[in-house]
Length: 402
Image (cartoon, rainbow, N blue to C red):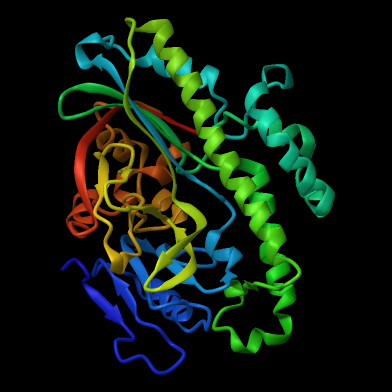
């Protein structure tokens, strides 16, 4: 059994157990999980994936089933953040010896960091399908207009953009040397604003009950609350925005490959999955809202993506539908140290050594993303052998960071 640790195994009334798929958990994250387990809205138990670590609001790598209620801070502010991957018919021998030109082309086509598309280059068809929902959001929640500079333009021009932090675009090779494109991003500035706005509303609504919360960040909306339906509508829109954002980026990256590489086709293995989101599901006899904060769905036979860090392997997996994990698995390697700690500890030389053989940035601006700041992805995979089966093992040859 990969469950390595159970908190609250003899839980008092009002507290549920926490089933953890690793023994490598820092004390602050353990306390965070205990806090979540005290909430009266949690159903059955909380599950913590092998990449679990301290997060803002709720623990990264946690799966939280709630009855008739949602915790906005558990979903977080990068609503719908997740992965997209496709396999091409290309193979390693069809790639150029020097991959710098291909990486440069991707960085020109896909805005990274704080950059965004010009309005005239916005992804028109994608934005058309999202526009009605955006209009409703701004009309119902005018506060959002004050939280984003040029909000009506920003959400449009950020469709098909990467952002910064741990978001990335990679060209990878699998165990058969087939070429894959894999990328990681979310709902950009508009998702961040939606998350912040509703987290603030939840805290305000529960201000009179905050003494009953183990952590103010765990404030929640219950069904019947005036903001509950509004949050459902907003979070669903942001999750769709994130999915479309990845889809549009993928089109741009594939266009770069087509311009520089031999003609190719795409295989049927295309995956677009969230790992910061909330969804209605049935578990242990109840319909619940499942919040996966840094976790992906791993229903039986469902394909998913588990990336390593920039310099380690990634995995395409097939879910095993494990009930105790609420049919979930890890979303990646998971950090072992903060970005500040990583910048203090490691040097550019360390980064160059740990990303040898990968065409990527190796400057001081991405030291906080160095592989050594993350858990060992191989250990993470060992700890979830009951949750997923490995379908493909990928190693990156190009990594684009914001």
